[in-house]
Image (cartoon, rainbow, N blue to C red):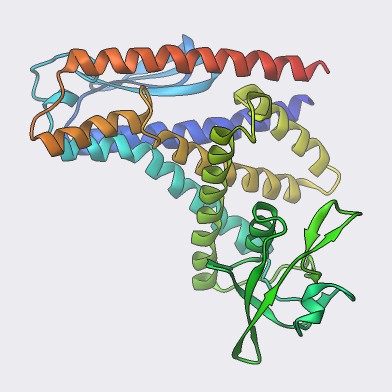
Length: 347
């Protein structure tokens, strides 16, 4: 890892954390909750300053951050305490962290797609002897749907085919403004070690106007959210193990390596590739924090939803026990992944 790569990676990673915690901070302030400390990083403070009621801190370990609110984890009767606010106010504060990650991912997608354009699912060729050609699909056709999956960009095609290897496909495509439909059984390709339809798409990307860029930026964020959910599903099913998961150290290492590779093409491509990586990470962070797991925002939101159904909150000491157990397990997993990432740096 190069020094400049590590610095840029840490700055990018810090942007994701600041975005997430600022979402909590802003909605807490708007709902009249006292924020005791807003910090970037973890561990001992490097420096800090005190505002009217909030301490702003930069901490030694450049991973993570926090927005500590009055009465967030203990019983407090102060009217400005987190627990004193209505359930809907608390839901908005808890959901704002992930919401701001999605907003950041959308803004970055606007920048990347505005500069680079989109990969439209329009075929430039079909491979001889493969099912697409045999089904009458031609160069210039636009893939619209694979089975029940709508296709917006060509990566949607790649993702669907990767997850449905060998399955029969009902392909809907557009030609000269008319919709056509064909049933295709992908063919095994020894060279790529995968099933293929036999379609070819040029790597060139097409730029859109402002509205088009906005539309495809929504698709871009949705694509990475879906990718994250699929990865989680694979993790639960055992298709992906802990060895395939990266923590902050692994992500910074990957970012640093990407910066080093992009440097051969110039500063512009360093920026674009780093921004593109941050879209994935920001969408990933947003989705993960909404999971209904103890100690995460999603776990706290789950208790708020229980409160809405019951008409009264779960006793705070019970909720604290659940989040405490979840935090211990989360820290244990984090330490395991940290050691795995550090070990891989020396391989």
